[in-house]
Image (tube, rainbow, N blue to C red):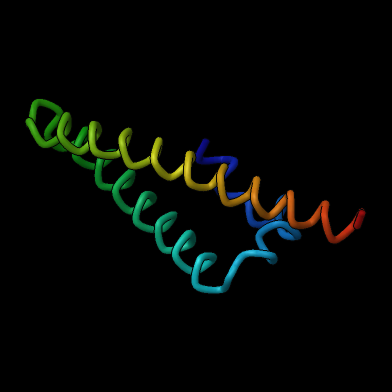
Length: 90
């Protein structure tokens, strides 16, 4: 999922360009926060694997990633339908 997120902007540039700039900025900010938290989790697992913070952060990341993927899917589906309507008008 992270590999896809890293290339999503390139592979889906046409669809992403159809979203409002504020929405694109929000998605980019969310990706940055997820990457930061993943880096923190990796460090925490190396430095203090027995810490209760490891499980709490991992659970939070799983929940946030699921929400993010669900929201991305809805936004990109809407952009794809708009693109199809503009490309193939009735």
